[in-house]
Image (cartoon, rainbow, N blue to C red; front, side):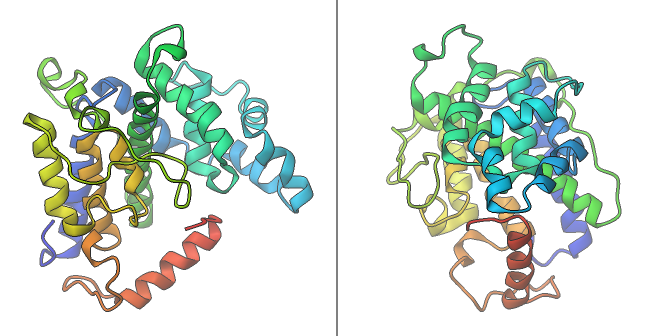
Length: 294
């Protein structure tokens, strides 16, 4: 993204590119599945039923039952909700990420979010046959699609513009199918540490061929030395679809700051009115409102 481009034009271009990224087949999901996840994510922002759960958390005691068994609380709260997403586990997982981030936990991630995403990908009756790297890879692709869709929706709402829909990129016959060579697990085994997140990520020297190599190069072009750093907050998105990860680095650059400037407290873009300190004040207020650990 051109940092000298007028800001309004830059943001409009970002929205169009996000729609294009979602509308093609990913590493684990078809274009149709990705659009379905994205449209549900964007449309459920501010879900009144989810807000009702959030409102019940007036103290540690009242919040504990919800956090300790979020899946059960969501099942009860969202009973009867109609959606194109037939799998109710996946529907609840999307709404949890979109509206109840502060209620998420490592057990919920492992026992509910990962199996829901893996089930959509695998079409198998038994998840035991699936490798954990690919189960979590599917979960990270699902998460990346949710993140991109919510970012676009929040941006457009903030600008007073309608939230766009996510549609298949034509021709679907050429672009709508899964591209398993884009799986991070096909490049190397995923790394896991618990000090900075529950999910795995790509780390170290990466060697790949074809479109996977091109996706890694694109991520490195955008993120430079920080592209695959374990210090980056979005690092775990690298464990899913490599193209999505590269786009999320662009998302970070357009809506926050470039990954390679993450440690530069004096950073400021030419086409933006806010300096780094002001950006961080906004980010801190938002994170506080969302009870974001990071």
